Length: 588
Image 1 (tube, helix red, strand yellow):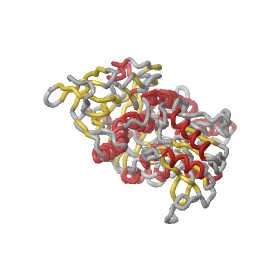
Image 2 (cartoon, one colour; image 1 turned 90 degrees about the vertical axis):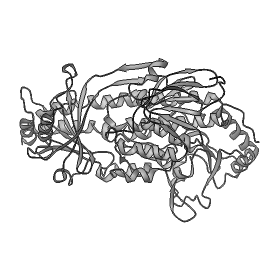
Image 3 (tube, one colour; image 1 turned 180 degrees about the horizontal axis):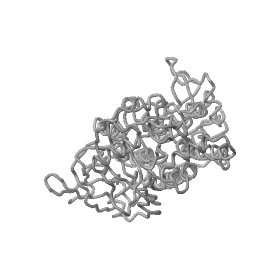
Image 4 (cartoon, one colour; image 1 turned 60 degrees about the vertical axis):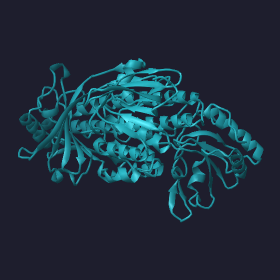
């Protein structure tokens, strides 16, 4: 290409999975020209990821697709009465309320967000992301193989191949996003540093259709576990029955010995296996597909090389425990997209892009370690469920659990304690909502000190307005008298300056700056009233103080004490924006 400053697109995305599609949607929403290529003929052809946590639904809310996604989701109230038993039809050993659906946790989830958890299998979610991205201006090329790329000081030249014709061609972009999954070619070519190991254990998945209503409708859940010789292998040692659509579409899963090769996927063997897990030897089953996946514990410590950025499974590879895969991938995209948009549109210096790694790599490491730890913590359950020298663990296990004896008391106590540990997998509200950022795009509050956690930060969400935390949710009331969230008056690609009725100095300062990407929010004013005083209890600043919230909903800076002089407010706000965006702010 003769002119390196001529571009076919501003951002090229390789991969149309959750990270790539979400990045395309956000970038297109922000007015950035974005093109997506994928080697596949269409999108996800199997359920794959499914549990969608509150933070991800908040991202969808900001991008204007929450209601559409919800139409394809299993609702929160059907997600959570998880069972452990001899089979789906057999006797239960225990139940666990998951995804915050238990009475002891539900109110905390409702207080933390205007959004509930949803269960949206990936094959239903990806089309919503892609269709909305395309409707907003993103372009897509399917059956297109990424080959390699070359960077220079102005942009990235990407070599591609049309898989249908074999034609090779180039696309010139300002930036490249590698969202090409757990076998990322882009990560390998860049040589991004990775830590951990791959393929510790194997799991077989079978997608099938069967009417299991009579076994689950009275105890609805997206997951049921089976203690059975049919699944008595691997580090989990349990079989899994996962709902895709209530109550006819399912996945059955079990561990296998990877040293012995792929499991037997003949239909006769699969029907026998599934019938044993369900406990119904006459069950009508339609096999829809099979797959295997491997337990990985690998994360990148750097997500960027100059003009190329990687995210999603390409940089954090782990088992599905805790349901963190697609959630983290989509949140990677949401973090990166606004930064790319601000640089492309001239609002920020390129130094802002370095904060992508600073903010997201620690989260990637955390969720990889958490997911693997959750998987290993099944060992406590297996100690209860398995009896030495016994082929079928379920018969003696039931006898011990029912025994009116000191041994029975000890076993029941051990089971209760083992289930308590699994709260860190299935009700890990803090892992999902307590993500804190430290980077050059966050201006620390010198008066704040180190954050103190009132309760376990993995289990319990803690609202905070300290810089680096996500803006807390509180219910406000709009001009029509209807409830709106604090999250509804921020975002949409802009910075938000939040103050109270007495914070007029901040309004004057923002008006003098006259920046297209900065809005002001006055809580207590008409259209944004705080009649519950819910925000007043959460804001942790004086009414005449201020919060500066980034487009991704994270607090970038705060002035805790009230400011009454407009010139002082202008000086503080200008300095904060300059620090965050890495360039002088003009407009004052």
